[in-house]
Length: 495
Image 1 (cartoon, helix red, strand yellow):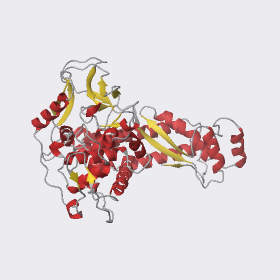
Image 2: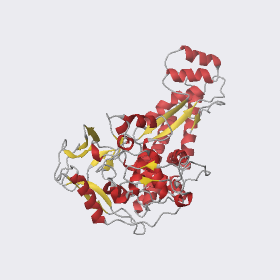
Image 3: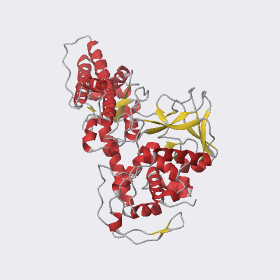
Image 4: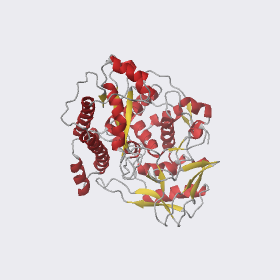
């Protein structure tokens, strides 16, 4: 199959809006930039026909009604496609499970890869030929072009999304038709049948109020919008279509290690979303010559779902990328940002002391589960530095080694009081309390998106509460609890 450029791919898509699933209409649409004049170019497609840019009226036409694929035929089509191209039968199969909560009966069951026979740690569960893996190398056919993408305006995910949109328009004529049908069924849904918050409505995003993830969603949404605006300088395309395709690719892309740049981002049949992600798993999809294989890290009984490692991602990133929360995530954390006051007359000196001790003028302190008191202890020297006001004292610190700051009772009380106030304020930013979250989850009747959001904010609050408790323990350990905190006109900022 000959490679196709992103321009040809997008031109093909702009001619006709195709179905839902991989590219459903989003409740939150990207705004369309002002129309620009553009040349009418004849673009060569990777198939026999030649595609022409459509008129603006055709490009803006509403999508047609969705056609739901037959469950059995879609499964057979995909599995047969894989086996006809070299997938050995016998070790894994694709099974279905109902979604946790049917929303008006519209959600189809989720599919997953399961063991067909008992497997032992170290067994190869499956091996997929690189000819069945979608990468930039295949999309663009030129690794030098793929390398340029990392330094210019289109990301790897945007190019993969455009390519799938192009191939989807080819229908059954596309080599990738069975794989795209399988991705269509999932529609970017994670293993809890929830899409990325990038596709949530504004009211659904309110479930994340108080969580830093809400701002991350806005930032990621803006990044997708910028890429869409770059695409729209060349052709018309509905922003909702591009965003849906981008999120679908984001939810199933695999980052292959020890491969060329053009193969780094890969869409692997039998990979996500058919594999179950877990933070405490060590199994990964790895490139091995002309194939991608999965070696399992634990024993499986026949029928059990196959799981893989999702990388060292926080739960907020798991929700953003895949729409689920891992309750046993050892990489989960919340960040507390502390920054030296730039209006402080001694800002430069304090910045030098911070850098000497491996800290920055704007420093993130990560709070991990079970290590909250350790994080508070790490923050205290940095915060004390912000309370130094005497120039002679500052010079003494500069001439000494280490991060030693004078620890007076009033300074220590001021630092700890500031941290308590910050943590209490941050917890107050959530519309519900930790106890209320626990009660809602115990009830078991939450809408899927709200359940995922509630699980996320509950874990965030637990870490912040543990930080608050640790800070109060430091206060209780002060020799004099009656001392008043010293004034601090240039105290560090916490956010």
